[in-house]
Image (cartoon, rainbow, N blue to C red):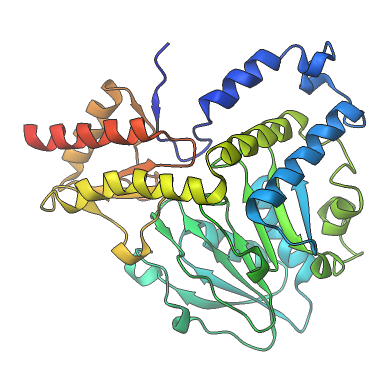
Amino acid sequence: MKRAYNFNAGPSALPEEVLIKAQSELVNFNNTGMSVMELSHRSKEYEEVHNNAQNRLRELLNIPENYEVLFIQGGASLQFSMIPMNFLSENKVGNYVLTGSWSEKALKEAKLLGNTTIGASSKETNFDRIPALDEITMNEDDAYLHITSNNTIFGTQWNNYPKLGNGRLIADMSSDILSKPIPVEDFAMIYAGAQKNLGPSGITVVIIRKDLVAESKETIPTMLRYNTFANNNSLYNTPPTFAIYMLSEVLGWVKEQGGAEGIYARNKEKAGIIYDIIDESNDFYRGHAEKESRSLMNITFNLATDELNKKFLAEAKEAGFVGLNGHRSVGGCRASTYNAVTLEACEALRKFMIDFKNKQ
């Protein structure tokens, strides 16, 4: 079977080596006579999977000891609510930098739970850039500053992160976690849905400093407190065991690729192949994001007319490319080049883009 050229924005491509291994172990994991999906989450066999996933993530991201690694369900969208539930108090403000739809959704949820402010925004230019650090307004009564490190819909990515005196920087890294080295110690909390770079959908990784965990409010439901997960090794209730197994295997694959540094070098090469065609096309392909804010994960572009967009996408689909449609809210085209997307797929897309332009 020929594998599709999968550029889906999420759930996205998984490493073929991981899928093959999971297939081989599907009905008999580690000689248990059971699938990992059938194991008790209290068994020693599953406990090893669970702890391996945490330890591999700690190693790959150099996570300091004063941080917890939690596995939570509900996607990044649940974190939009959990963060203000746990950390917004009456006299504090949630500060949000708006760089796209997901940061707007995070702000919307926080507004339901406490006082909020917008520290900076690039909405005026249709989210085509990341605000400069000196554009961000911060105040002493900020409970935290929230950013979205990569913006899947508009194709922008933070290259430098704010450094806060109070150390209360929180980032939604759902679409670029582990795509490059991350200075975890600069953040109070990082959270990410797994379905872009870490594994299948169903699990959200939360990396959170222990002093924040201690602030979890006892007045909110048990399953919405970070200390519930920290105090129970994310096993207070039954976790999504198969998703965590796949997470562990994907992390093992990342290590084999040279870790975060190796993946970063590969991601720059992959994205460069496609951005070069956009830049050299004499405006036939028109990138949405400003060059200094371009994402390595989501490459967004348009052609001159909507008719040409549709023709490009239809012919790309016939040629075996999947997921090149832009988000329904903005249209156009988008190639998501997450960690597991191969160099071969990016080179094939480059050739297709050149051939399509030459035929017009």
